[in-house]
Amino acid sequence: MIVGIATASDLAASFRSATGIFLSLAEIEGRLRSLIYKLDVRDVINCLPEHARSSYKGVDDLSFSDYISILGAKNWKTLGQELDRSVCIDSLREVAKVRNRLMHFRQTLSNDEDEPMVEHCLSWLRAVHPETD
Image (cartoon, one colour):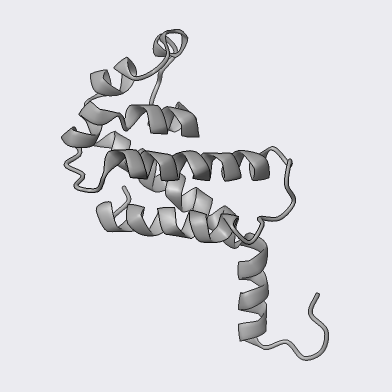
């Protein structure tokens, strides 16, 4: 709650504290989709569960857990990523837990550990994939 004279800086800080983690999660998803767009469609479809293969229409239809599955060993190498895949995948799994808690209203605000972990994941994603499509 802001009480008193509010500056632009006050408003920006308030906006960031209320929406920051949601914006970071959206950017992570966008960067993951952008990475997956670079893969051959057959490689993407082969990583999906059998029941999801026939209904696949495009990257935008995938879930966060699908992104993680698709970034398997073969696809990670295809994308030319130099970071350790298992460390990155573990980071994405932790982000998925936070994302699911927030998006499914199991948690109203992030705890002190969630936001730094999400920001860390976002920073390595920015480093390996600086552009988004």
